[in-house]
Length: 149
Image (cartoon, rainbow, N blue to C red):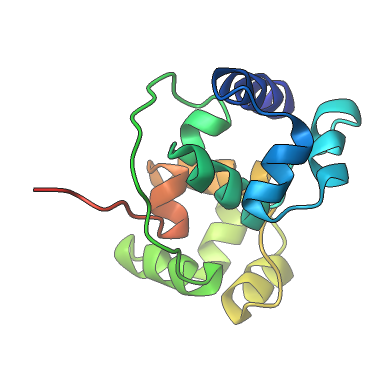
């Protein structure tokens, strides 16, 4: 379950850093009520909030959503717009928006809106798309980390 994995991981990360909801909210620039909703009301964060949380803790999105148990702290670079990352991954895998929509049973209007930057997929759809392409959520959204030599 994506929501329970997310809230459990976030709780653990906050506990390790001894952070309260209000403190985390201030650190990442998200309203505290949004974070409270993740825990109490079963709300899954939208991609920008998920990235802000993952950036703050230096973890992969896959780790944050319980898709991997491997935590490797990294410093991430700013992400490109989702529309750019979406176009890049479609091109890399030689797929069209139409083919993706058909294969994943997602509306073609949604894929067009993602391409045009008018909307961003839900985390559920992002996970489906990453699974479809056999990539991580970070790869899907163009999230890269700084490698120190």
